[in-house]
Length: 239
Image (tube, rainbow, N blue to C red; front, side):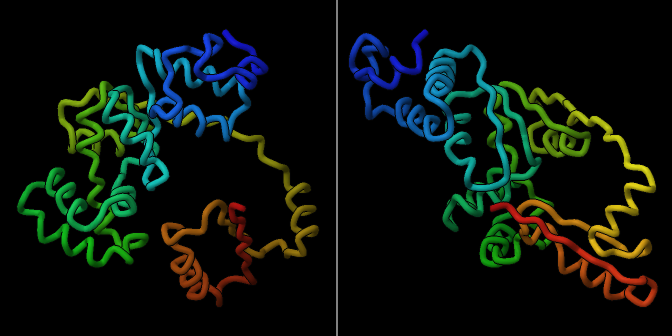
């Protein structure tokens, strides 16, 4: 083990850090990327154990930010954790039109070529159009995995439909029920927010993407406005 100071001060070609490392190698590029997010000692630990790990654990999600880990999971198979049982938008953001169509066909067969071309041409609608969510495109990553972890029965079923022979395990998200506030605390909060006791309060948090479907919520509120005293929707966005 090396101290953070040794890692910081060493020459990567010296015997302080493994002498067989090539500074321009893919492994070092990964280590450098990790270093931007972690302290130096954590960086070294992550690098070392990812290089020599017996089983690799990969977390895959439905956007192009997961491209590097996706490619590594294909090259060095391990256990896949599906953050989303959907990679449709991941491929839309990563591939060009021809590659997207071929990946779609890999998942659903040659008969789906026309559908693939149509979905690519109309991809500007992909954030809200149900057709894109009906085609998760999971086959490749699941077939390469040594095992797959999903978080609910619906995700497990989608995974099995795409890769019947994959080893799939369902591990639900941990839910720790919060202690609910009493009526007095709720009234105090509403007063602090200048809200009446009958005002409907909704919240939308995280990235405000099309999939939040805020326009649908607003239309629903508008239709019910005559039956509501008033309503408020505070929005919280990521910085």
